[in-house]
Length: 467
Image 1 (cartoon, helix red, strand yellow):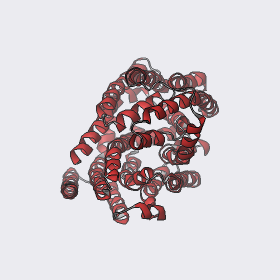
Image 2: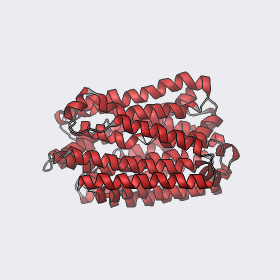
Image 3: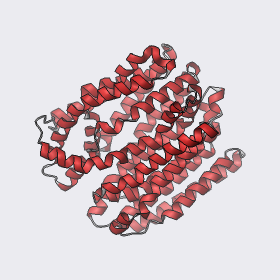
Image 4: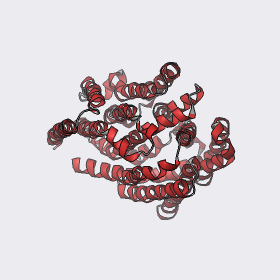
């Protein structure tokens, strides 16, 4: 079980990180040709596009996953109907996305307004939910290499195109949008061929409305849950735009998120790996196994995030060849440590998903998102854009731990997760890392080794309990 958790996490996590690491290594090349405005325009457009991204699937992924586990002989029929419905739905969704982008493109990018809109909606119009269905299929079938190979290929292609369009063609922020559109189209094609030709998942457009309505009845309550990821992770740039933060400062914050985004992606990859293993444990009525998998993942996250945070000043100096952008590493530490919420988040929420208690998710994840938005609206005008990192930390801690204290979870949960202990450790390690980033090299090396050895001990301990 532990071997599968780490091997799948490494495959899901390392595959996207290899090209992302290449992308980070490319920063010294492309940041010479980028300004704070370029980062700001990219951050605003990304935030605006992400503001309605959850509507592209209407939360129907829960129906895809549950039908696979609970109706193994009929799930293909269900998937084809959802595929057809979402393909049609994505056309009006693309129109709405284009309209929203039209009104929120920063003044500095108005010259490219229509081209930015086209580049963002083109993959949606042509391929709809193909990418999402392909990823879900290979995840539930526990075929991580299918996702990993695609991720690596298209990740490296993105990096290559970014260097070409930004460093050689001098396209600035348009280089990012152009690269993303090309790669998104090719990625969708790579999933469309096996889904439609090899595995027989061609969409049924004459779908049964009764089935779709029943599926939406379960899935729509999860939309606020999925939307919360945007509210916590990305909406801060959107709020900055609303409260008149300069595009330059938005760019500074976006740069501070560079390493935090890598940790965020590791958390996403860990979710892909641990989800099927926890569902299998629940099916076996073995909640303790599922819990210990969460504990193992949590201590590993502590070791990774603490080490990265302690050395973040040097990382920024090495990778970002822009003096102004190098100074935002303290914000980066807060963001990196905030993503320690992710493993414990799986402990409560995966159980709720498996039990189809989706209505509670709104009270966990959506409220976390609203906390982030409201705090940003209040505090950014007073304390500046930097405070957004701290509001993100608070919101993510709520998202990761609130579920354990609700009555519904206590009714379906069979083991103790000790949420207060884990959140206390998260805050303590964050404070230590925040101040230790300025310490000498020997102290940093010793502290990181001590953290890693402690994590290794607890991984061994929890793995023995699983066995």
